[in-house]
Image (cartoon, rainbow, N blue to C red; front, top):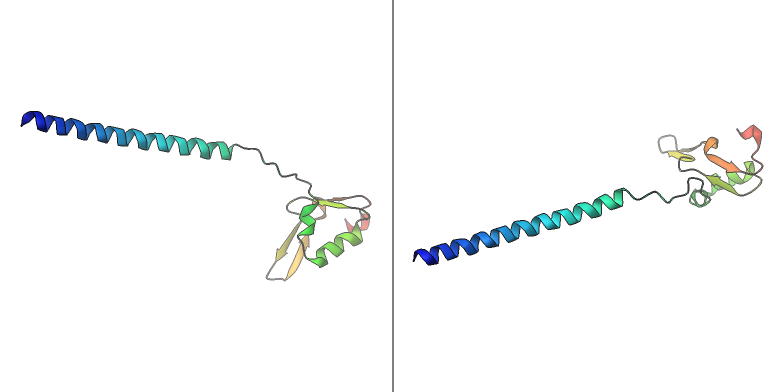
Length: 104
């Protein structure tokens, strides 16, 4: 009876150790994946033409009036204030050929 008790205890300890090792292995794998995503470089171009295309027509028309060619903008180029119901245009974050100097 003592041998059966030891055998049961040994198999129980072995199972516990296996479960702990599996848990540690899974935690290490998920940590490595999260770290590799965080360290990837940002591939977004800081001066992007597509940012302008997502704005409402009134903002795009304003850009067309002050620029004489295709325009590129950084991320913080335009912000909308819902309380005032108006757009704030930051011309320092806008690049275009022939930008009218009076607009700046």
